[in-house]
Image (cartoon, rainbow, N blue to C red; front, side, top):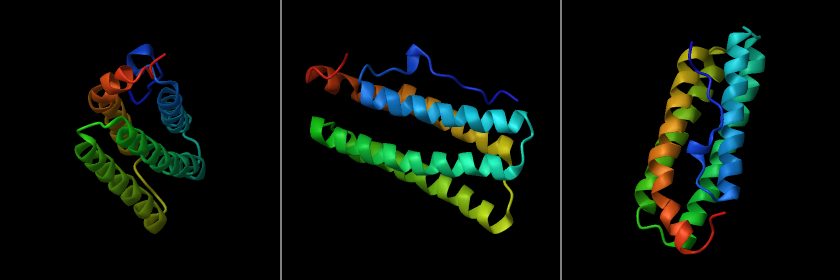
Length: 137
């Protein structure tokens, strides 16, 4: 399985608070991947999954507040992407709570693809707004 993803400079927006959050999110994905590869008990993987879902919601709230403050014109569209992701991750957790199981490989691949695409395609769109305000490092 190729679910492994690690931080690299290509994911950097140049704004350290967001970059640090993205690093934490990718680290949680990597922990989920490691649990899958080691065939750890489902409880270990589910703990990481729950942490990932909670951190995702925290990150989205921070990011949306930042985008509002910098006047990002596509905030509404960006927020809708977040809402879809929150809905999907909540459904994964609800399914786990109901069935005490989830397809770790499928979930990991979905999360990896969504996050990497979102950072590289959607989040990079607001980078110029951060730069205009001198917020990039």
